[in-house]
Image (cartoon, rainbow, N blue to C red; front, side, top):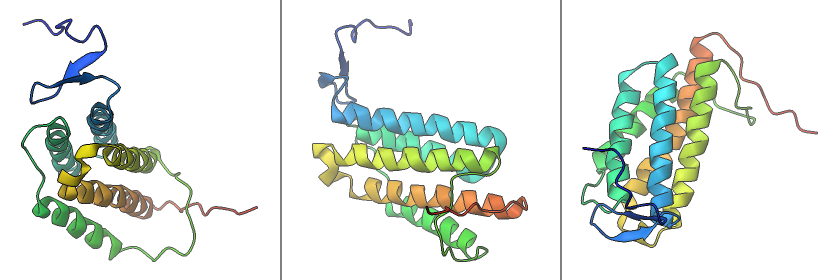
Length: 169
């Protein structure tokens, strides 16, 4: 089987349900951003391998399928798992009193890239008319951004690094 089909040469692509849409469609933008985020999570795993990130990558594939009009959906258990990990990490962190700069070593910076791409994914999902069917998926993405932020903070702490505080003008 060839990797190229030539069916998208005129700027159209097929959703999972077979419906043809523009490659610039908001739904395509949303699942393309989910795919991009998944690649960034893979880059994070290259410097910080862990089972949580592997689980997240699998859920991002599930999310991409949902956004591509498949019948697969994330669950409340998926959201709760992220909340559990966030709470677990936060129990070991001092509360923030200031904004911090996205900085640190390579792993923490990759966490911040994942966090910002996750927020873009959320905005792209909200651009789609289908958003009313994605309640759990939107909750998941919202928590995922928080997860990457807290993971960056815990990695900074565990590696003996200091968080850089935003210096206001």
